[in-house]
Image 1 (cartoon, rainbow, N blue to C red):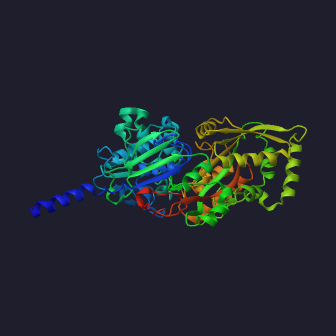
Image 2 (tube, rainbow, N blue to C red):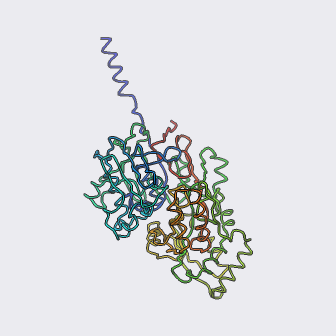
Image 3 (spheres, rainbow, N blue to C red):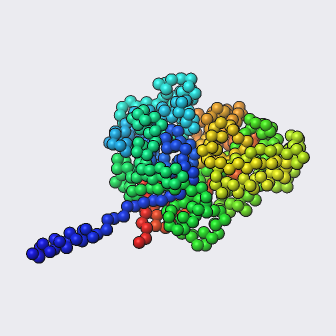
Length: 524
């Protein structure tokens, strides 16, 4: 009888014991991503989500440094032209299907196909026949990417490229599930049909509301992944996202109202995270359209824009005024700044007015154009300030607030006058910025064409000596900054709020904060 009673007590205790709570990370995001297809995605809002869903040959460690992903090793030939990556054993997709080297080679070939229209195909132009395949001038079979066996991915380069590992660390190089892409076409990215190979798989996507990821049990390192669910909440109003964080609804937010900085420093110092990044906030100037095809107008716009005043009044959050395209935190590189940096603001305004007069414009004959930006309060405030500054030299900027999807369309089609843009380089290298402005590059949205710039970048991209490369790229950036086809505003810093109960959120210049390395231990 005593034994029966003891067993009943134990059973009741087991029934009454609460189940361990699922570990969940709730993050803010910007607008909804344009796509979750690694080869077709664009925009910074897709990056953190894709980094959770997929892992390429290389990835990043908890501190943002490159490390092996689905590859376990690699070799490089003495001439730097043959790279081979060996995959880990037993890799699977989230649906349980085997993941082979052929899947990786197929995905990278797909990236280079002209019909894919991949924004980041240029990262792999160093691969043998990369550019002509991407242009449709050669068949995909001629591309120097292959899978000699199930575990080996082979790259044959046309020229040495020391940045190949960094290119492979970009989301565009992540593998896509060939069996699902070929079966479902573009529908493979929908919830219920989505297949990935990373720490998480897509569970649900309610546009404008929430995107939910669930732990992928088939991930090669699943045993070390503690967070079961990651929720991304697209929130474009910074005050809203800040209030949700303060209410405990969000565990980490990627931005907050700049005017709250002083209050945050005083009241939430333990949650505040600020560190340099590889990002730049800038405006594209459509030099293909009048009056911006006149360099005098473009330079006048740059001269009359007071970055320092803008940042002091609206963005006192650690960001750095930008007079270069390349971020000053790029290792070993001396950025080339526009010469106007050495002028006082009165000197700049005087020259801006003179240039406008020479070009036939001024207060009596103003220029009217559309200044487009995506829907964020910070972007609106910056645009309003720019409009005010430019009005002093006879410019009437008509503000256009639009969704990022439309802004992305405008950039691709050239349907804009001046528009807000941003870039976070996937490479800790000046080429990660400057290659975007080469003639014919798919991401050259201003259609910039300068033979001297192109020649310098072509040479820099073909040699492995980093000191020589940096010297060449500095010269190229000097040319770019004096042509005024882009208008740098500031170099980003990461401006985050992270709850103190989140462990493993390590600041890094790449802005890679992977949930697979974190834990969330909310207080009772």
